[in-house]
Length: 105
Image 1 (cartoon, one colour):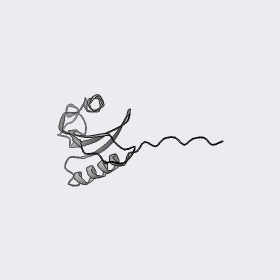
Image 2 (cartoon, rainbow, N blue to C red):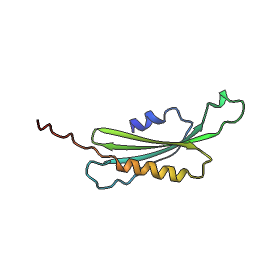
Image 3 (cartoon, helix red, strand yellow):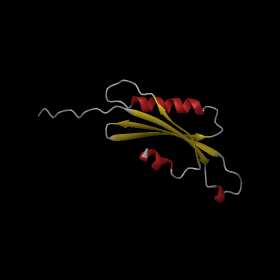
Image 4 (tube, one colour):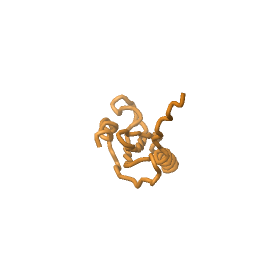
């Protein structure tokens, strides 16, 4: 949860935070969480008009002592947002830790 807090500390609003089921593949995510937040593309105080919002979708994949973060960023009005998020989730679920190959010299 500390890593999620770090990545979302400066966003205007976190809209969802949820745990997702993980697959049973060896070396894959032991815990997987999705955090979706919205924020203006530039700070509102720096804009002369209302700037468009962007959607940040981050997937936090815990693999052993490591946390791998996959980020998806797009405009809030993009009707393909669910498709982009599905790709990000597929990437997160594909993360594997592969042990180093032994040196056979």
